[in-house]
Image (cartoon, rainbow, N blue to C red; front, top):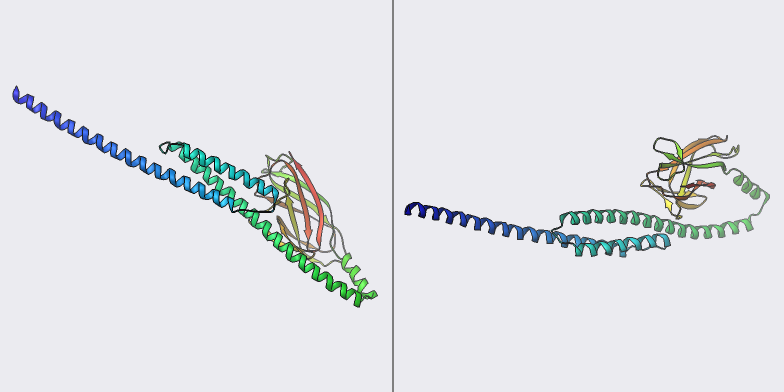
Length: 285
């Protein structure tokens, strides 16, 4: 009997020792996990603060863009505050904040693209303004020195040879190809019009450029955007199409998409290398 009692005591002692060891391991492992989660939270905080600093470095002369940048900075400040108030062990919230940080980064890249486009356009406009003044001075001097009937006739012929347009219509197109004015349904804008008949204009391939401005007046572009020369002025276009113009009236359509459309008035400006040939707009509900 005594021998059995000793055996039970030994067994209980071994079990107790194993339980104490297991509890100690669990406690140590929990402490390590909490430390790792705190490090992740600290890293997320630092990334958010860094993004805030990057937003502070963005600047533009466009009032609408500056207002939007201010709104995004406020969102980041609110995110930093929420991260600081959230326990590192709340994995669900931390993952939500990481996704929100990713969204704010994507938005910032979009603003950087818009600011770069505006800066490029402003630089081109300043250069063109200088060139235009120099060209105006040169032409004025030539005109004063060489004012003849032949020169005047040649100038009139050049003006008459410029291609003009008419019947411009801007419509919204849904994914299924139907026309609509509901911003939530359309995926593209379609601009249709005609090049007017002109027997003395130069025949052959012609590029028609489309510039779409949103309700806030900002030019809408996509990754394929480029710069073109219209009557000596460099501009950024939203879309371009090449047509074969042979002097007769020619109908054409240009499509623009790959952006999200909101409510408001969208303005379409159409150009050739001679200059602007038409303006029209559409109200999206």
